[in-house]
Length: 152
Image (cartoon, rainbow, N blue to C red; front, side):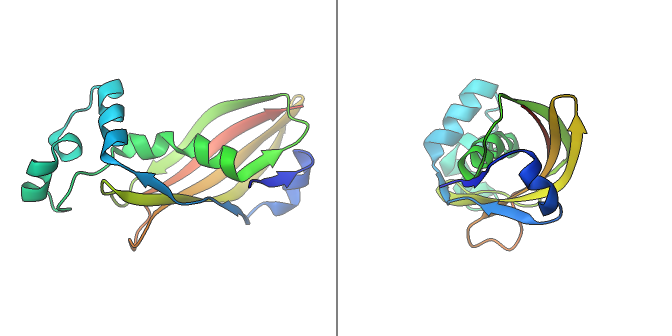
């Protein structure tokens, strides 16, 4: 269940705080193959389980960094709901890093923090700090500052 806010303005006092933590999501090889097919990124470390078992430092195939980044909007939608919003626009990213890999068959979840809340005409621009954790891994798989505009 997402954390529910009755308005965009209800988030303003929460700047600098963690807002929500998502549920764990499995990253199966089928999802990695589908992402490779859509993007054309068929590097062996993603799509060749036998070679990855033999040659990669992970002992398995790993998800594309951009696959993990593409899940950010899903995790935000699953963890945060803001009432009274008519339109939501992905405004871009300030910073994205991929500190660790996600092995095929691994699970990830997102920690969502609010970094900034700025007024824009008829709405607000929120800067979310999204940290994608890989289960049983010491480093996050992704850390991103994501700008999203919400319009009333």
